[in-house]
Image 1 (tube, one colour):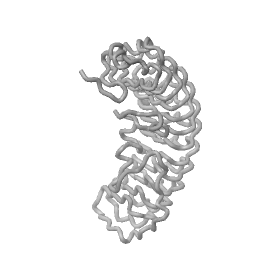
Image 2 (cartoon, helix red, strand yellow):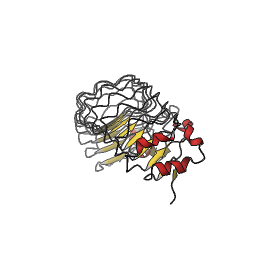
Image 3 (cartoon, rainbow, N blue to C red):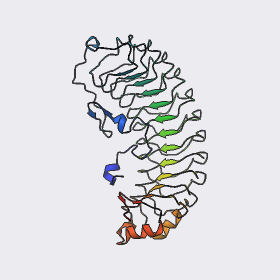
Image 4 (spheres, rainbow, N blue to C red):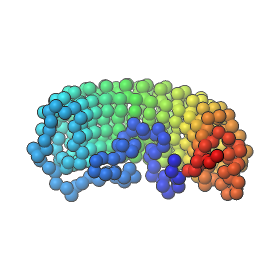
Length: 345
C-alpha cells in the first residue's frame, strides 16, 4: 500500500482496499480510453467543446456493448437501432439531458459519468437496468428511479445532492455510492435491506444514525465528514469494512456488535487511546495513523486479532520512539506491513 499523508487524504472520499472494487469511483471507473479523470476535482464539463452530430457516429445494430466515451455527444438521439444493446457507456460527453432511451429495453448497464446532466429523468421504460452511473454531473436530487426495481448498483458520486431520498422502492440495491455530495443527514435507507456496500465519503454528515435496517451491509465508508462519535452501528452484524477517517472522532466505541470487522479505518481523527476493540478477532487491517496515540500498551487491544496483517500508526506520538517498528513487531507478531512498508524477514 502506498504511504499516505494527511494532505494526500484531505479530499479522499473512498480509496481503500475493497472500498470500491465495484464502485463508481474505483480505478476502472475513473479511467477511459482517453486517460484519467482526477477523482479529487470536479468533472471536466467540456463546455468549450462543440457537440458532434450523432449522424457522424456509426452504430452497429448487433452490438451488445456500446462504448461512446468522449465523443463530444451533446444530445442522446438516434440510438433506436441498438435493440440488442445491454451495456451503453456515454461517459465524458456533453450531454445535458437524459432522453430518447425508451426503446432500449434490453439495456442492463447505463453509464453517464462526467456529463452536464441536471436531472434524473426519462428512465421509466428501462426496467431491466441493474447498474446506473450518473457520477460527476450536476444532479441536486435523487428522483425518477421509481420503475428501476431491478437496480443493483447506483453510482451518484460527485454531484450536488442535498439529501438521501426516493430510494424506497430499490429493495434489490446492493451498492450505493453517494460520495462527494452535500448530504447532511443519514436517512431514508430503511427499506434497502439488500444493501451490501454504502459509500458516503466527503459529505457533511454529523451523526451515524438510521442504519438499523441495513442487516446485510458489509462495507460502510463515511470518510471526510463531520462525525464526532461512533454510534448507531449495533444492528450491522455483518459489517466487515468500516471507514471513518478524516472526521472528529475522539473515542473508539460503539463496535461491540460488529465482531466480523476485518478492516477498521479511523485514521486522521482525534483519538488518544486504542480501546474497546479487543473483541474484533477477525481484524486484518487497522488504520490509526494521524491520531494522538502515545502509549505502547494500547497495542494490547489488538493481540486477539491473530490474522492482523496491516497496521498504520505513523504520525502518532508513538512514532517518535526510535524502536517504533520493532515494538510493533514484538507486540503484534502476525503483522506483515507497518505503515507503507512491508516487514522483511
